[in-house]
Length: 82
Image (cartoon, rainbow, N blue to C red; front, side):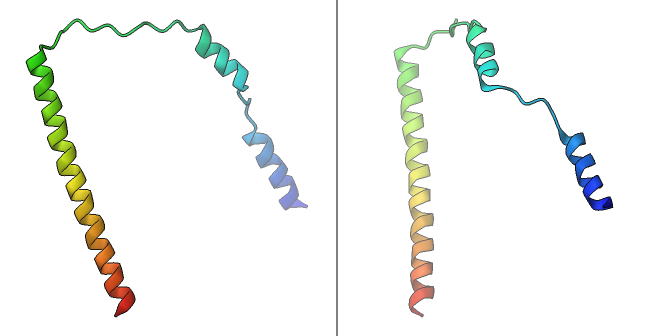
């Protein structure tokens, strides 16, 4: 009977007050979020530079992902057929 009593004691000690979903939702809805406000302005030239930089970085990242996937595919085909 010691094992059962131990389990019951553990369950009692692990009990905690559960948060109700509606309480969380009310807390979120009652909180008035401030709209985003930016004080700095970017020029059209700066925005174009940022856009080109992001495109370049994405192109590099996509190329690397393609290379890795290709290498893994070739390796798996090699292992499968040989």
